[in-house]
Image (cartoon, rainbow, N blue to C red):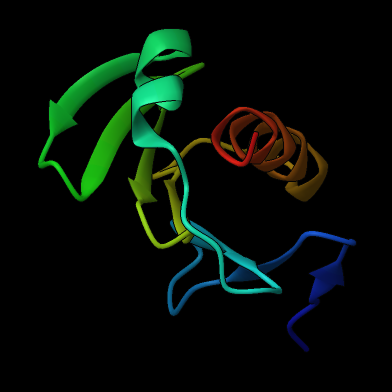
Length: 94
């Protein structure tokens, strides 16, 4: 069974494959992509979304608040992804 973790700000749940995971804000909010760009390595900027590389993990950050972690074959714990999501949301929601 798929495990869904809930926090005060977002929900972290697996995507359709085990190679990616999605974090979604519990309350609809916009992220400040400009602030996020200042703090993380950006590999692509589409204006409404960013692609970041954080600790060998590709993270797609949508301006409307969703994060998609593309972990590929890396063995990344859900707690690590939750920690990264907290960091991104902590910067983008200020």
